[in-house]
Picture 1: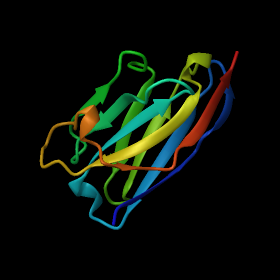
Picture 2 (picture 1 turned 180 degrees about the horizontal axis):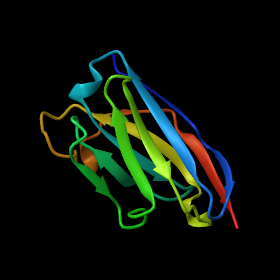
Picture 3 (picture 1 turned 90 degrees about the horizontal axis):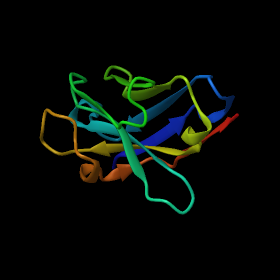
Length: 125
């Protein structure tokens, strides 16, 4: 059974940076496309970044493009989200997710079936 464990959330002032990590266990990490989502209370969970199983392709939502970087280390079974130039609108619970769709491209937002527990990111102005 696939399990995802996130770490790295916390509080920052606007303009700061944070790096989130998510480790996968229970299956072969390199078989999974990985993604990061975020959710604020009362709103839908938004797909903000994705990376293909090989790491060769990435996707970013407009809201984070140019500020966030998704990467993965298949040797360490870990996906990362480097978040730079944070602003208060980035405040949310961040979730990593895994997709076992048999594709080489970045999985689409609805193709993720396994979720981490979420980690809070709070950005103050």
